[in-house]
Image (cartoon, rainbow, N blue to C red; front, top):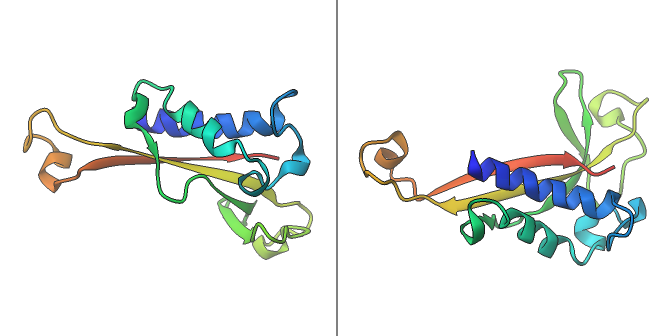
Length: 139
């Protein structure tokens, strides 16, 4: 739960940079944020590490990542375009009447060391880290 919370706090920090008046990147014209907002990684990292995990929580390789998504006929998010060219609508997901959203994904990982090795499912599997992701629409 702590790793999931760290990922959610990181996604909220990214949203705040775009949507809070007075912030460094306060403008939808700064989207995609991973390309146009120079302080994004630092703000997300600081937010992730402000949780109870502290510096043990780190951004996973490739995080934050951003993409254009639409809700498809099954109610699931579907990627519909690259950051270099925003699609004009959601026709790729079967709904030409809506606009795609810019979503940011924050992936967080932390080292795992069981207190009692061998007495937990994760310990038996030999897992050495726990990861979680959070996805948030920026626009």
